[in-house]
Amino acid sequence: MRRSTLVVVLVLLVCWLASAAHAGRFFATPYAGTLPEGKYSIWHFNVYEERASQDWRFLNRVDVGLHEGTELSILTNNPPGAGKTTTWINAQHRLLEERDDRPEVSIGVWDMAGRASWFIAAGKNFKDPVDHVNNIKIGLNCGTERLNGLGGGADFRIGDDWGVMTEYMPTSMRPPGTDSMNYGAYYWVNPRLRVRASSMGGNPMLDFVWTDFIK
Image 1 (cartoon, rainbow, N blue to C red):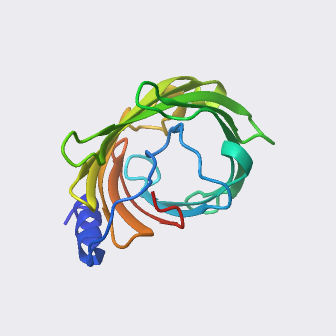
Image 2 (image 1 turned 45 degrees about the vertical axis):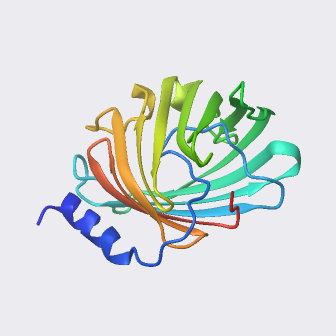
């Protein structure tokens, strides 16, 4: 069995009790949304670098909502083999709240203590005209350094708990040997836990997010 197929099988095995769908982000590029004050999200990513090292890379991230649309996050990147773990400190601030007639807009910086990469992002949710539930989310972003170029993605919710998403990564963000597109499927196991199986530029990925923000 191919490793990418195995990832999909694993995620299906852990999907059990259905509940309501909630807040989420794309794969690798910034999204305009920020967490409300006092809310948090904890992420864990497992990426198998099939096109490079043929080994696993593990990433962990914690996002915390601060005052009035400001969010702080810490990301750790554990590369394959004996590579050195790196830590980024990221910040983001919402300039405009989303309304029916306009998108949400924010600015931010990734790895502010290192190779600072500034960005601006816009995002919009579109509601089903019948039940008025947000079932399509679209985002665009552009930035500097690691985020140089135009990126963006789309998230399509299927029912209350399932969804699929896709994302375009600018050249500056792509690991060696990978494609420009990411895509995957996710499932909300319960109101706080989401599981996702994805292709990150051709590399299989399985990730989990635990959040206390239930939108």
